[in-house]
Length: 163
Image (cartoon, rainbow, N blue to C red; front, side):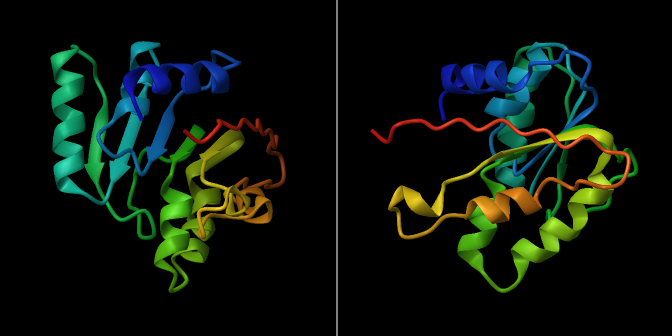
């Protein structure tokens, strides 16, 4: 994903400016995380890859942005700053789906602890219907929204053409 695509995606998702703090799960090299930080959001970003986190951290420092990056396995998180007002899954759910072995269920079981009351969960994932031979179903994405008592469940769906 390019930096420009990340900016457009963040613009589409950030319809309310008070959602702070954010957590970005599966942040990779940080394009979406950096786009959020540029808008002034307090962001914690995790990825299992130390190389990706080091690259993301370097980008943030290069732009003078403050982002809390951590190398962690999203199916076994330890984040004392939880819960968050917004959770942004940037391709992690469909990546876990491809790995199999119950990782999706482990991850989905952790989401309610990450999302505070009234939180919004954003999931950027490849649909099983996209014809890639892998992906996630709408039901799986729906399970990513905690929907706990006292929480507001909001979703926004967007699709991009394959090129």
